[in-house]
Image 1 (cartoon, rainbow, N blue to C red):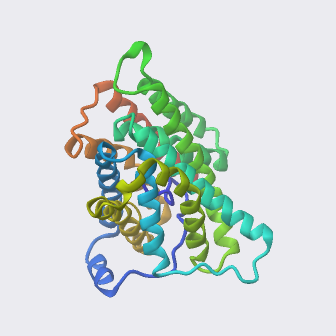
Image 2: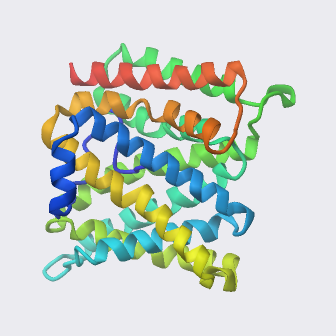
Amino acid sequence: MTAESLPGAEPYRMRPSPGRALRATSDAIPPSGLVLLGILSVQVGAGLAKNLFTQLPPSAVVFLRIATSAVMLLAVVRPRVRGLSRRDLAVGVAFGLSLGLMNLSFYEALARLPIGITVAIEFIGPLTLAVVSSRRRLDLLWVALAAAGVILLAPWGGAGTASWVGIGCAALAGTCWAAYIVFSAATGARFPGASGLSFAMIVSTIVVAPIGVTAGGSDLLRPEILLIGAGVGLLSSVIPYSLELEALRRMPKRVFGILMSLEPAAAALVGLFVLHEVLQVREWAAIGCVVVASIGATRAGDG
């Protein structure tokens, strides 16, 4: 999952470009291919993280993911806060808090739900934000369609593979994702370059650390755990950020948003082939509802 991306919205712009080798490779790939590779990277990263739940609690895995991503980002961009007002810093802190809470609630949902269902429910957050921002009557149809998808996912009478606690955590993750988008834009306008994102990553790491370190304990220091955590951070953040930014440089944002709408379906496929999570027909139908609603909201919002 890249929190910086949603249907119809521009992700937080990281100024540093990837290395020359990555740029040369990406130039040979169509921009649509870069977006799809980024989606695949995010979902494989989530699948890798979910496999860690057998050894670490979700909150500890979140700490590993955020901490390693922060270290990788800080190696490239240092936060610059000189000359910023208290209000500017408060916006940056809110950005970091929304990032940390979003990841905590997403991983808690992931521990209780198949990855495809988790991402589909979480996607309602940015979808709702996009719809509210556009204020078109037609968007009510997309909201209704997405709501129908969530209703189909709910474990009425104990049916299905979803749980109410997991659904609540995924919905909270979606709400935090919407807040993250709002604070991302505000932070980008107040902080120079990409220093706002690195500042937010530091805040997020500090917020998540007490929970994650307490839950993970000494297991967090095991070399194999650290290595997998670094892989999660690389797949979930560094690689998709780079691919998406390069794709946005070469394609319209509307097309980018439509392609990103495929993320719930991609998550379900990763869950099937990587995690062996078999969904019921109605659950696939529910994910389809969310995907169609996301594509519809993106197209309408651009028109």
